[in-house]
Length: 220
Ligand SMILES: [Zn+2]
Image (cartoon, rainbow, N blue to C red):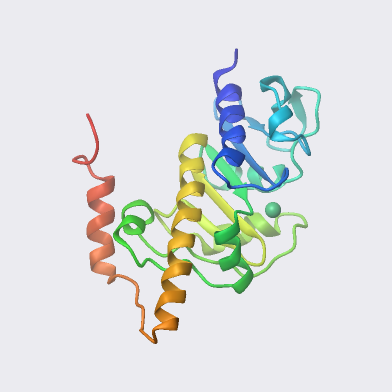
Protein backbone atom coordinates (compact mmCIF):
# COMPACT_ATOMS: atom_id res chain seq x y z
CA UNK A 1 0.00 0.00 0.00
CA UNK A 2 1.27 3.45 -0.95
CA UNK A 3 1.60 5.29 2.37
CA UNK A 4 1.19 8.82 0.96
CA UNK A 5 -1.97 7.81 -0.95
CA UNK A 6 -3.40 6.40 2.29
CA UNK A 7 -2.47 9.58 4.22
CA UNK A 8 -4.09 11.80 1.57
CA UNK A 9 -7.24 9.64 1.76
CA UNK A 10 -7.33 9.94 5.56
CA UNK A 11 -6.82 13.71 5.46
CA UNK A 12 -9.67 14.03 2.93
CA UNK A 13 -12.15 12.05 5.01
CA UNK A 14 -11.27 14.19 8.04
CA UNK A 15 -12.49 17.35 6.22
CA UNK A 16 -16.22 16.66 6.87
CA UNK A 17 -15.44 15.28 10.34
CA UNK A 18 -13.73 18.57 11.21
CA UNK A 19 -16.71 20.50 9.74
CA UNK A 20 -14.51 22.08 7.09
CA UNK A 21 -16.61 21.13 4.06
CA UNK A 22 -20.21 21.00 2.92
CA UNK A 23 -21.06 18.51 0.15
CA UNK A 24 -17.98 17.63 -1.88
CA UNK A 25 -16.49 21.16 -1.87
CA UNK A 26 -13.03 20.64 -0.47
CA UNK A 27 -9.90 18.67 -1.16
CA UNK A 28 -6.54 17.60 0.20
CA UNK A 29 -3.47 16.58 -1.79
CA UNK A 30 0.05 15.44 -1.03
CA UNK A 31 3.11 15.21 -3.26
CA UNK A 32 5.74 12.52 -3.60
CA UNK A 33 8.71 14.76 -4.52
CA UNK A 34 10.93 11.82 -5.55
CA UNK A 35 8.44 10.57 -8.16
CA UNK A 36 6.77 13.96 -8.80
CA UNK A 37 3.31 12.44 -8.27
CA UNK A 38 0.51 14.40 -6.63
CA UNK A 39 -2.15 12.34 -4.82
CA UNK A 40 -5.46 14.17 -4.71
CA UNK A 41 -9.16 13.67 -4.05
CA UNK A 42 -11.18 12.45 -7.05
CA UNK A 43 -13.69 14.92 -8.51
CA UNK A 44 -17.23 14.88 -7.09
CA UNK A 45 -16.93 11.69 -5.01
CA UNK A 46 -18.74 12.01 -1.64
CA UNK A 47 -16.36 11.63 1.31
CA UNK A 48 -18.46 8.85 2.89
CA UNK A 49 -18.23 6.72 -0.26
CA UNK A 50 -14.59 7.41 -1.04
CA UNK A 51 -12.09 4.53 -0.89
CA UNK A 52 -8.29 4.70 -0.70
CA UNK A 53 -8.12 3.34 -4.26
CA UNK A 54 -10.24 6.31 -5.46
CA UNK A 55 -7.41 8.76 -4.65
CA UNK A 56 -5.95 9.84 -7.99
CA UNK A 57 -2.23 10.09 -8.77
CA UNK A 58 -1.35 12.79 -11.29
CA UNK A 59 1.86 14.27 -12.61
CA UNK A 60 2.56 18.02 -12.32
CA UNK A 61 0.74 18.62 -15.62
CA UNK A 62 -2.42 16.86 -14.45
CA UNK A 63 -2.01 13.62 -16.40
CA UNK A 64 -3.48 10.69 -14.44
CA UNK A 65 -0.69 8.25 -13.68
CA UNK A 66 -2.45 6.21 -10.98
CA UNK A 67 -6.14 5.34 -10.53
CA UNK A 68 -9.16 5.40 -12.83
CA UNK A 69 -11.11 8.48 -11.67
CA UNK A 70 -10.76 12.12 -12.69
CA UNK A 71 -8.84 14.31 -10.21
CA UNK A 72 -10.53 17.20 -8.39
CA UNK A 73 -11.04 20.16 -10.73
CA UNK A 74 -8.84 22.12 -8.29
CA UNK A 75 -5.79 20.01 -9.22
CA UNK A 76 -4.52 22.97 -11.30
CA UNK A 77 -4.12 25.18 -8.21
CA UNK A 78 -2.58 22.38 -6.14
CA UNK A 79 -0.07 21.63 -8.94
CA UNK A 80 0.80 25.33 -9.29
CA UNK A 81 1.57 25.56 -5.57
CA UNK A 82 3.78 22.44 -5.72
CA UNK A 83 5.64 23.75 -8.79
CA UNK A 84 6.26 27.16 -7.22
CA UNK A 85 6.79 26.30 -3.54
CA UNK A 86 9.34 23.46 -3.43
CA UNK A 87 9.17 23.25 0.38
CA UNK A 88 5.45 22.34 0.33
CA UNK A 89 4.33 18.70 0.65
CA UNK A 90 0.58 19.04 1.28
CA UNK A 91 -2.22 21.38 0.16
CA UNK A 92 -5.80 21.78 1.43
CA UNK A 93 -8.64 23.76 -0.11
CA UNK A 94 -11.95 24.38 1.69
CA UNK A 95 -14.89 26.78 1.79
CA UNK A 96 -15.22 26.44 5.57
CA UNK A 97 -17.96 28.71 6.93
CA UNK A 98 -16.23 31.27 9.18
CA UNK A 99 -13.10 31.65 7.07
CA UNK A 100 -15.25 32.05 3.95
CA UNK A 101 -17.19 34.83 5.71
CA UNK A 102 -13.86 36.73 5.88
CA UNK A 103 -13.31 35.84 2.18
CA UNK A 104 -16.77 37.19 1.30
CA UNK A 105 -16.08 40.44 3.13
CA UNK A 106 -12.53 40.70 1.76
CA UNK A 107 -11.10 41.06 5.29
CA UNK A 108 -7.94 39.36 6.57
CA UNK A 109 -8.14 37.29 9.77
CA UNK A 110 -6.36 39.64 12.21
CA UNK A 111 -4.00 38.24 14.81
CA UNK A 112 -6.03 39.04 17.95
CA UNK A 113 -4.92 36.12 20.14
CA UNK A 114 -1.78 34.36 21.33
CA UNK A 115 -3.10 31.08 19.86
CA UNK A 116 -3.10 32.54 16.37
CA UNK A 117 0.32 34.12 16.99
CA UNK A 118 1.60 30.63 17.95
CA UNK A 119 0.39 28.87 14.83
CA UNK A 120 0.42 31.53 12.11
CA UNK A 121 2.72 34.27 13.38
CA UNK A 122 0.64 36.94 11.64
CA UNK A 123 -2.78 37.82 10.34
CA UNK A 124 -4.07 35.32 7.77
CA UNK A 125 -3.88 37.39 4.59
CA UNK A 126 -6.80 37.85 2.21
CA UNK A 127 -6.34 38.10 -1.55
CA UNK A 128 -8.18 40.08 -4.17
CA UNK A 129 -10.87 38.15 -6.10
CA UNK A 130 -9.68 36.13 -9.07
CA UNK A 131 -11.52 33.62 -11.27
CA UNK A 132 -10.43 29.98 -11.53
CA UNK A 133 -9.08 30.22 -15.07
CA UNK A 134 -5.54 29.07 -15.83
CA UNK A 135 -3.16 29.83 -12.91
CA UNK A 136 -5.00 32.88 -11.55
CA UNK A 137 -5.65 31.29 -8.15
CA UNK A 138 -2.10 29.97 -7.77
CA UNK A 139 -0.60 33.31 -8.79
CA UNK A 140 -2.69 35.34 -6.32
CA UNK A 141 -1.71 32.90 -3.53
CA UNK A 142 1.98 33.46 -4.33
CA UNK A 143 1.43 37.22 -4.42
CA UNK A 144 -0.29 37.52 -1.01
CA UNK A 145 1.18 34.71 1.08
CA UNK A 146 3.23 35.69 4.12
CA UNK A 147 6.45 33.99 5.15
CA UNK A 148 5.79 31.45 7.91
CA UNK A 149 1.98 31.58 7.52
CA UNK A 150 0.67 28.35 5.97
CA UNK A 151 -2.81 29.73 5.15
CA UNK A 152 -4.45 32.27 2.90
CA UNK A 153 -8.01 33.54 2.52
CA UNK A 154 -8.92 33.60 -1.15
CA UNK A 155 -11.10 36.67 -1.75
CA UNK A 156 -14.81 35.86 -2.44
CA UNK A 157 -13.91 32.17 -2.41
CA UNK A 158 -12.47 30.25 0.56
CA UNK A 159 -9.24 28.95 2.04
CA UNK A 160 -5.99 27.46 0.81
CA UNK A 161 -3.45 26.03 3.25
CA UNK A 162 -0.05 24.58 2.41
CA UNK A 163 2.61 22.98 4.58
CA UNK A 164 5.32 20.33 4.54
CA UNK A 165 2.81 17.43 4.85
CA UNK A 166 -0.91 16.86 4.09
CA UNK A 167 -1.52 16.46 7.84
CA UNK A 168 0.09 19.83 8.65
CA UNK A 169 -1.86 21.54 5.86
CA UNK A 170 -5.05 19.99 7.29
CA UNK A 171 -4.15 21.30 10.76
CA UNK A 172 -3.65 24.78 9.25
CA UNK A 173 -7.11 24.54 7.62
CA UNK A 174 -8.64 23.55 10.97
CA UNK A 175 -6.86 26.40 12.76
CA UNK A 176 -7.86 28.90 10.06
CA UNK A 177 -11.50 28.04 10.65
CA UNK A 178 -11.08 28.13 14.44
CA UNK A 179 -9.44 31.57 14.53
CA UNK A 180 -11.88 32.93 11.93
CA UNK A 181 -14.73 31.95 14.25
CA UNK A 182 -13.09 33.48 17.32
CA UNK A 183 -12.17 36.66 15.48
CA UNK A 184 -15.62 37.13 13.98
CA UNK A 185 -17.15 36.79 17.45
CA UNK A 186 -14.55 39.20 18.86
CA UNK A 187 -15.33 41.76 16.15
CA UNK A 188 -19.08 41.45 16.82
CA UNK A 189 -18.57 41.78 20.59
CA UNK A 190 -16.29 44.78 20.22
CA UNK A 191 -18.62 46.48 17.73
CA UNK A 192 -21.70 45.91 19.89
CA UNK A 193 -19.94 47.39 22.93
CA UNK A 194 -18.30 50.20 20.91
CA UNK A 195 -14.87 48.97 21.87
CA UNK A 196 -11.87 49.31 19.60
CA UNK A 197 -10.28 45.95 18.95
CA UNK A 198 -6.65 45.79 17.88
CA UNK A 199 -4.34 42.95 16.83
CA UNK A 200 -1.51 41.95 19.17
CA UNK A 201 1.61 44.10 18.63
CA UNK A 202 3.98 42.62 16.02
CA UNK A 203 6.76 42.21 18.62
CA UNK A 204 4.43 40.12 20.85
CA UNK A 205 3.23 38.01 17.90
CA UNK A 206 6.86 37.26 17.03
CA UNK A 207 7.59 36.17 20.60
CA UNK A 208 4.70 33.66 20.70
CA UNK A 209 5.45 32.34 17.21
CA UNK A 210 9.13 31.74 17.99
CA UNK A 211 8.31 29.99 21.25
CA UNK A 212 5.75 27.71 19.56
CA UNK A 213 8.00 26.89 16.60
CA UNK A 214 11.16 26.65 18.71
CA UNK A 215 12.76 23.60 20.29
CA UNK A 216 11.15 23.92 23.72
CA UNK A 217 7.50 23.31 22.71
CA UNK A 218 5.84 19.88 22.92
CA UNK A 219 7.39 16.48 23.67
CA UNK A 220 10.82 15.28 22.57
ZN1 LIG B 1 -13.12 26.40 -4.12
